[in-house]
Image 1: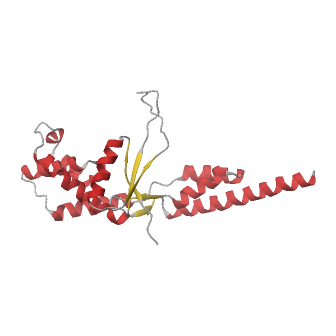
Image 2: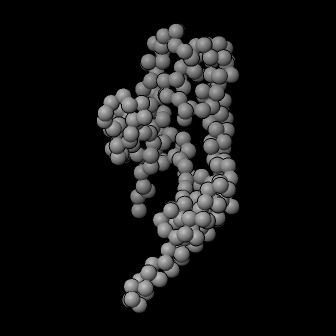
Image 3: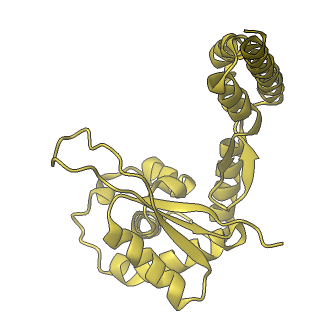
Length: 220
């Protein structure tokens, strides 16, 4: 059974999405591109709704694709304007760009590395690997306790219906994707367990309500 494709990048501009898929096509990377439901533009830049384009690939291809995107930017980085804003960054800020590569474009990542090297800062593969591993551990950490949502979830569950079922399901199963394609649970073990109880209670109450209403119909 093939693993499902998961979200790699999301774009508001179809040209940017197509630029990525061109790289994937050239290198034989399996992918899908999906046009999402329209999203309201809060900036009121037009009377139309904006669209989002999601590019999905295999989890095992994440690092390969990241490397390919970096390779494609090498020439642009070598010709970068000295007035680029990254040249005003401190060494610590540039190192932070390398550490949080998932928050920056391949161009910015490579330029930050280039600037540090030009300043005499050691940026070898070991340094980059250590920064990447530290970042992965940071991102693996579960979200803060969802006590507020747990209370609301139990209230919804006792009322029965879709809201209680959805809240419980979300707390129990929600996952996030790391930059290397690994999927981990979003919430800690306790919150996920509470989510399961909310889900079970919401389903039970919903079933009881449905059965009761049906029995009332037949009784009447």
